Structure formats: C-alpha cells, structure tokens
Amino acid sequence: MITANDLKGIMAMMPAFTTKNGDRPDAEDTVDTGELTRAVDQIIRDGGANVITTTGSFGEFHALLWEEHKKLIEATVATVKKRVRQRQQQEDCRVLERFVRKVSGAEIGEERITR
Image 1 (tube, rainbow, N blue to C red):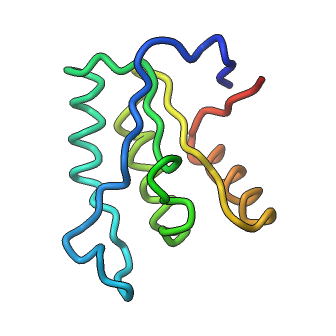
Image 2 (image 1 turned 90 degrees about the horizontal axis):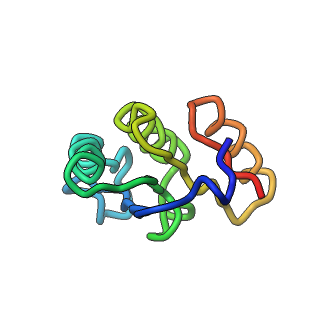
Image 3 (image 1 turned 60 degrees about the vertical axis):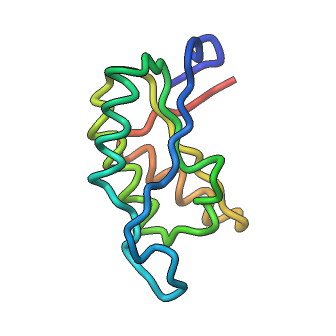
C-alpha cells in the first residue's frame, strides 16, 4: 500500500499507447503493450522516475474498454517489476464499475494509495 509519504521524486504520467487503428470508433484491443513496455522501462532506467502512474490523466478511464484497461495494468505491473512505485487510476463514471476496477486492479498487483 502506498501512502502520501511514499510519493516522492519524479512521478511519470504514462499515456495508454495506442495501436495504429486506435483512432477508429469500432476498434477494439487498442493498447500497444509493446510500446508501453518499452516506454515504462526506459523512463525508469533512463529517466529516473520514482513513481509510474497510468490510466489517470489522458482520458483512459472513459475511453478504454475494460479488457483494454486491464491489459494496460497487467503490462505496466509486469514491466515495473517493483523497481519503483506504480499505480493506476481506477476511475469510471459509474460507482459500481469504479469499485470493480479497484478490486480487479488490486488482484492484478497494482499498489493501493491510502491517506
């Protein structure tokens, strides 16, 4: 579990890297995990990030399907490998969906933030 005191240094806000067809309204499976993995690894290794945050500031919570959101979280957790703190924003317009996302994120291995 992450507390406010754990959030120090550089917090890198990562976008959900999209596939080439990600701009199409009928597109599914649009998260480019290869590019995401490369960027997360590089920003930890070369950029000196202390915290990696995804799915929170670029509109992913309402733009990605749940399976895409889950795929993004899984790829981030696997790439970070506990080298730095990592978290994903688990928001949704619906309260029940937000709860489901928070529980699922914890099961995947994301770190939780407490006050």
